[in-house]
Length: 343
Image (cartoon, rainbow, N blue to C red; front, side, top):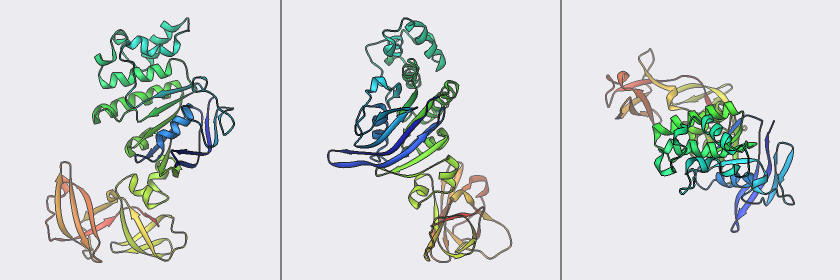
């Protein structure tokens, strides 16, 4: 069984601090997705785990073995780490067969292991004697994953692996890779800038900002109880309203909202965050609490913009079939389902 442990990791490049005090662990056969904007330090973490760069501070252990610290460095090829880059990084002058078997060059069972790796990722073995440019984007990523898996690594690192694919192919390829990793019981770290990808891929999700790990938890924890407004807005659309605390509820321009999680640390000036998907325009008793000011159709949904009584402007996604009677200038009543997060 192989786990990954990163403890108080720090790294500077060119005099600029890139990572500060990063700590996390990935238990055996689980997946961690690290998500953040460009320049947040995602790929630097992978490079340090892989052994491509040395740490400035902190420790990295794979299983029971320390592989990186200020006075310990195990070379990349001795760590048992498989790495899949964003573009796949297949050698263009080698066939797919030779690409997959590249890390098995001295293995007497190279041929069998190459075929087994291709079959594991469901890459048609008839493709093995083609060159990378003769494969589709999805097939190239499967070949890259097969190359990483062929030497039976202890962990797999995926660096923006799906970002170069178009939307439909990205989802299809991601699901195929997930199935392979589950079958192989592989400890995995994915870095991505795609929030949806992180939330659907990882058993745990870490949000990076400017070299700091803002929050680490299950997908449900980081989405439903984001620790900061930044995390909340980074992981999806938000609506934040000025609020007055009332024990377990908050009073807002939309009425009383239950408090699901409280991150306000006792502050007198608070706001409450809900997701736009929690809002709906309802036909029920009660005074109107908003006025429609704009409508914008976006296929399945109409983006309905409304002004609240205190001057706050909000936008609600409403299914197209439910928006037929909504008109600009109409007073409406907006309901919030579920509670919010207090900051």
